[in-house]
Length: 192
Image 1 (cartoon, one colour):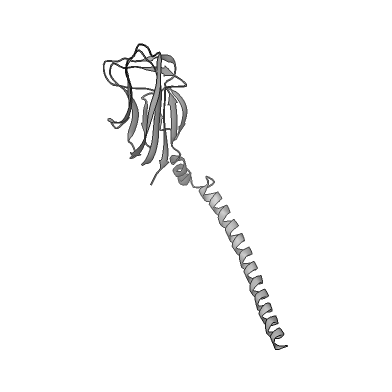
Image 2 (cartoon, rainbow, N blue to C red):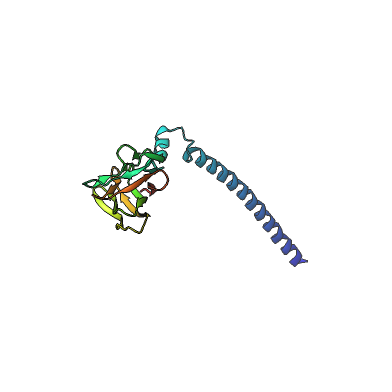
């Protein structure tokens, strides 16, 4: 009989602890929901603070542009910046379609890529430039048996705010201007 009473007391204590735990779980769920709603309202672009919205928008940096038209660019007697006139996307307004230059709005790690289309009977030399420094290139030799050439390259870049990234066409070379093949793109992957 004493064992049964002792077991009953233990069972009551366990039931009481279980009920208290269930109450605590419910309170935590309520607090978690309230915290989640707070995060949604403040951090997911619903904040009334104009500064915070501007900060969030500044973190969205992505552009893609095409050379546009249907004509050869080059050859020129000197190295030239290619101007990609057809803007596909320009979040953060970081690419200038009049100069062909992408200007980093925030410091961070970016991914930039380019693709080209060119006649195979001409030499092609393209370089992805960062502040007048060649980062990666694409080159194709002149051949008479090759009608066209397509290619590209890409690089991860560590940029500071205001750094310029652009495409340089080598002197005495050419590329075909096209709205679907000859492209230049970049995206911010991470900012400190």
